[in-house]
Length: 131
Image 1 (tube, helix red, strand yellow):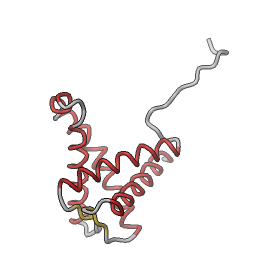
Image 2 (image 1 turned 30 degrees about the horizontal axis):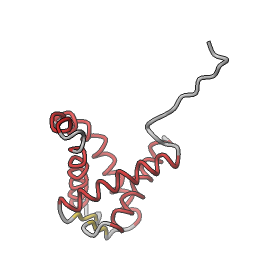
Image 3 (image 1 turned 60 degrees about the horizontal axis):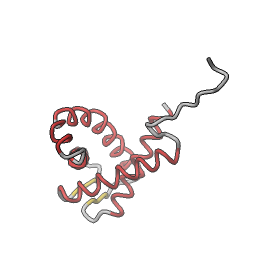
């Protein structure tokens, strides 16, 4: 439960930063609505990213993984569309803004995850006492 809450807050902070840094991404809602948008973004990512990655596997391999940036942009555009359907206030002007925004959100998410210790990569310590 703690991990889910931390990931939700990290998504919200990353979205907040993208809104304030990327000219083509706008947010007009409240802090509570930003948390809802972050939850939608998390659900969209966890539900659709694996499916899109598998479906576009040849493109991901052919571009040496760079196509995942396109997937990030598409997921951010979908989140913005869902946000508009629920009048939550997130607007992404186009694919270019979504591409740069997805890149920034990804970088911020990784850095914050490492900072708070919620990194997906876990190092396991092996004690010399154990056999």
